[in-house]
Image (cartoon, rainbow, N blue to C red):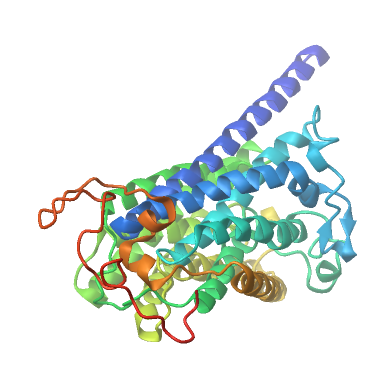
Length: 449
């Protein structure tokens, strides 16, 4: 091939790669509205708008933080021994405008947005919206950006980082550690601090109010996840493998979840199908470029079973993980991350145990998982306690009975007329429920307001 033609082919390949990165960033961005639909359908009718607003708040806050200092914390010069990056290196995107590096930063911020939004599902129906907005700003700054830098940048787990030199670099291609385990641990901390919803229990009536919305949201998430996983692919061959794994992993987890439901409960549910899809997507996220499609099926099937069992366990232990953030993202994130110790293929880096790599990679993955859990858990606890002391985390019991949509946003998702009162939803209290203006709830000593 003549040199001119070869140069033209290279230029076209580079352009195609840039276009794909733009498309992938758009796909991942669209996942957050998809998550809003998924979570909105899973909550009760009187909390659907608040649930969606929490995702949209993450879109707004994280986007602005990214421009001001977040982009620097993802790709700036290391400080504090690689714990994070200098937040002033690219403040205001300085030094990135006019550079191809801005394209990668654009892609990265969409991960930060959805990571924060994921946490919101654990504290549905009972959280002050203003506190959530402030939590988003502080948490993404102190927890997400540093942790993403540690895992994907020149931080602690890099080849030259302190933990990377001791344990080796963990495999986390698209976010098992930085996104899902991170969000799952933060969600667990908030659940324990805020407490359960009023009347929480298996027979409390706190069921998803719109299952078609849940299934639509899961479909949008699955669609966007092709960009989530394959957006950082460096070759066509790698992108093809990631695409195949992103297709079969949620399929396997969904079927495994439905089978678990059928054996345990006697029926398979649409909620189980949607949740199984998400569990499989979570499980394959860290491993999407490092396992074969058969390996993806195996690890995701295990994740589907484990998450289904974990979700069923929450009522027994009294953990009000409202929309199953811990049961799905934490559990399946750990399964996918740890499974790499067995299933990682040698052509994409360090091999796992089944490919002659010994136990070394397993030790690395376990060490990284433990560090993320410890770092996120401690920082989230400090942030949440500070906000609890200053702003309050939880709405009042009265507001919880009326509904978080009306009390936090003065809106209602559905204009459904109550025949007993003649009022439409959002116009006036339907009836004198405990906690309304007509029947105030007495203050409970020690309540978390």
